[in-house]
Image (spheres, rainbow, N blue to C red):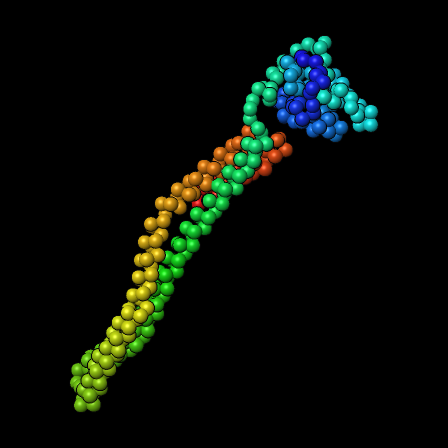
Length: 272
């Protein structure tokens, strides 16, 4: 293991510590010492630092378990690698200095990708539902108007038709009944003409425009649907890539939040 170097600084060191045969890290020197103060890292906890070739018990790191008052500028705060310990069976994590990856920058990219992806998904899904609601509203308005007219037509014509059938069913028709039959026939014909004119007016003023609007909205919806699907696919891809980066590089205490977001995204995709 390399000895301490006077050129080393706290910001240059990256520490790992073992929890249940798995390594946690990297963490900065300041965070590492704080974990020791909080009791997370104990004297027998195996630790590994930038430049080490093996895992060592935390108690061998000079100054780690001294009081904050006496620690001060203790060189052990930087590193003082023990030389006498036998190798441990746990593999050392890959030294961070061999990688040019900036974890903080990657996490920032991941957050931006997740946020932008979620915005794309929400926007495309929202626009899609708005257009579907418009189509359903126009179709429903047309259906309701036609149903109301059909019910009104039936309520007006049915009594006249029943009266006419009653008069026609009489075997012996008197002059008065013949007159009533003619009046019932004329009333039925007149009512049919009135309703026919009303149907034509509704077709021109209400039903026709509703059908035209429905066809226009449907055409717009179909023309832009492809772009929305592409935007939704891009949003989903960015979100999943961002979550993957976050799962790989995020600190252990943030892993649960990343898994929760991933679960929400998968559930939303499944339910949709």
